[in-house]
Image (tube, rainbow, N blue to C red):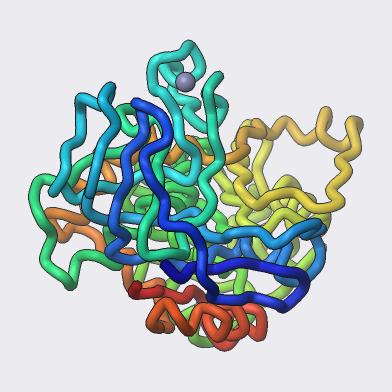
Length: 338
Ligand SMILES: [Zn+2]
């Protein structure tokens, strides 16, 4: 088969690779229905994270089970399934506590920007859909694998409750999914920090009520203005830079909470400032597996349409253009059809 391999900064190739096979009795092999490019793929693509050897890419996936290992019980060939970007057993103490991305047997998924994928710990990792989905639902189902699950965790970690005022820092795909999630959780007012007209428009479609274009201290001041000087109840931090983390903490009211899902790059927080902020902090790699059944249900019953976040669709062999378009911010998120 041909699959996606990153050789170094801005060097994505679509080249011949061995077709995955069952390696362990707990594996499944699936035929990918759709995959996509993640914002986190751009860190190594931009050279901000070292690539020491040709690296197969992709960790968002859904598709049809082709084959299962002898120990797999909960999925079978022919089923349409979705899994998280981290394989997990869902039986260890961390999984049972709802933190499957900290599974004692965790394996990070790679190699999903391909037509065929091996999924370890298939019983724990994969969730079947109620049936074979109609084609128009596949993009939305794909989002549950990472981008929607991560936005959902940001809102859950920030403790979003009905009637609250919420701020979302970051207008990338995860931030936009955070808006949708906060809306689903009943937030009354959702303030998005964004400077891009197309992203602002999509944020409004997903439930944003206010847009703030200022950043840093000016952005904090603007949010304070919008909340009578109080600050927001919950903030979803979906970027991972020093500026975005500080902005998030500083616009949250005392006793409020921040859910942070942007992978931190060069972030250092001051203990004294944190101490006096009275802000709850919770974040990390989203335990998407925990939310998959609920999110699949919302998509399946057409209560949400997160697939709108894909504003570029390409055949998988044009994956390099998919990365380029996101790197140059010509696209929010690229969907790839094998
Ligand atoms: Zn586990």
